[in-house]
Length: 203
Image 1 (cartoon, rainbow, N blue to C red):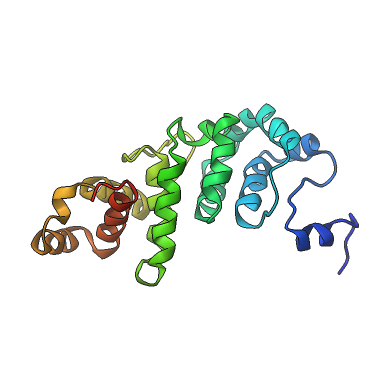
Image 2 (image 1 turned 90 degrees about the vertical axis):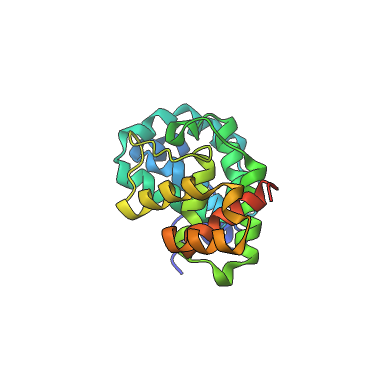
């Protein structure tokens, strides 16, 4: 292994996430590194997020909007796919970084509950539906797309619209109404809608 920093391998084994050299300089080279910093923490990090690095990310957060919507969307969806996403997103929320991407709505406990349920039933849920359901929570439980920053495919957008239509208790009142919803909207959407209601303890 060639380790030019002489610290990289040690950090990898310890699951310690940090910028290489000067954090602010690295960020200004590519503002996407702000999102990658938090994404790597959510996917691989084991220790606490460095407070100094959080402040540097916060200071430069306006640079995120200079990036293409495609790059932001790809990185953000990778972040929220991680199981440690709630903790990391909460840090981003309090540092006013999350609002640069998807508005000011955030409910950490709601997302944590959903992720727990998705992991519990991972054998019977479609993987593509998992991350968009998590985004649905981050958008305030509404079909909101933040088109000025994010760029979803038609399939992703349609999933969110249909999810918004079926997150009502009346859908799950009987076997008949559930089957009807599955025919109209598809199995994945109905199941994720069910998990959303469970995560909120509404059913």
